[in-house]
Image 1 (cartoon, rainbow, N blue to C red):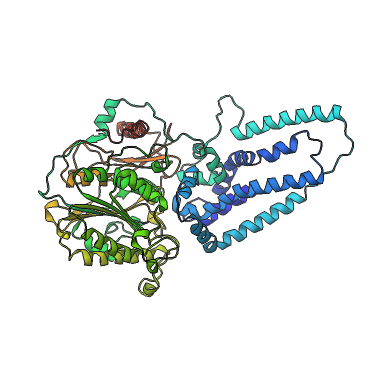
Image 2 (cartoon, rainbow, N blue to C red; image 1 turned 60 degrees about the vertical axis):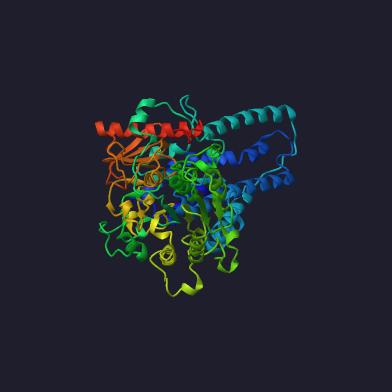
Length: 623
């Protein structure tokens, strides 16, 4: 009963994300969720059940029962509270929390203050949790046990053994999800058997189940779906470009903007036909008039660390973060390693505590020569009180730092201020007022911070021969319903700008683009003419044999876009094929497959197969 209450609350707190037809649809999802709740409850209460049924002769005594009650509520509270955390965290992660979430928390240097912020900002959730647990304890105490004083060993022990065997039998069925010979233990993907819109499966699931089922999972298994020759011809994981845009190597500045979804940009929505659309990026919109922009671009992951590996190394993250896997520490070819080989100064800037979000560790793996964080900034007056240094002063710090470096340089700025709790500096509270959703004012502040950075940069000698890249790590709060669907929750901007006209970075493109295309595009722009590993494509060469595509995962399935279709793949079966414009995934065409669909399904499998192979065999630097 309490798990169903949590499920309905989970839906209630995220109604803007889940589009259900009505109460009947919700009740249907709740019904399917019973199997997943049963599994989670049996896992959590295994110790309680065992101590209750062992023939210890003292099972019904008051003292023993008090200890059992403590065990029962400690284990259940720890597990149950994860559902409540997902009431809010789901808005940002777009998936039920799993072991991967625990890995992110483990790598977060600022975890204590973030938890404190969570409970103070969303105190009402804590109140609801306390009320529910008070009711739970009340009901538990109303289950009365009678102490049996007459002890008959010849009856007690045999009956206990029968009870243990019967309980074990029931638990096995409950944990597996059934008794059929063909039944494997139910997993997260089984929740998606009952839905047509993928994120509805997250209503069927519960968070303790998602965590338990991923604790020991082997994230990377190499399938054998297609031949190596098919991969070489259709995915082209090894590429070579022969362009030469300039005799002088350009400087590179990459802005990975925290939570800067495409929805917030005016220049990215000029053809979106959204009624009463309002931009929150006036400076970036003005810069776009002299830039090459991509209005149909998507993220390859859901979290900040996913964005880092996708943009810089061309490595997407699907169900699990590549950076949290056992395979992250290997020799990885990336824009950093290529720039290092060309004697660039490479620097990573992030205003949070050094080590936050796992950025410092992964930047070391990628081979950055310098890391600049809150420690190096060394001015706590600019600390925002939660995450780190406000964007405006930290952007200025980057500008002054790279001005002192040897040229050419490659600098990456991962912004910070457009993040929950969505605050702006006190001095700007009248300048950046509340928008339709809390993040809007933060986006406007970061846009202003970029403008101030450019005011400084334009006066520097390095500016004229610099390529600037703008994208986001992932999306965040949606206001317009046009972006509130399974596909466009990954919609991010991609924009290239350079004052140097030789790079020809101007225009508006509407072809499919993904974050992992940024890395090979920069390789092409700097004139690197050796073979390199990349699953993306150059957006400036735009070669006819490099197919525009997008691949990502909302948590438990793959979403693959290519040509005219969107494919939903659970790792074994294609559960849905949709028209490329059907972003809400409303009309499944999988019963009407054609040659193009078959090619798309094969390409999706080929991409995943090569991805798994290169990661597990540590061939991310092989070319």
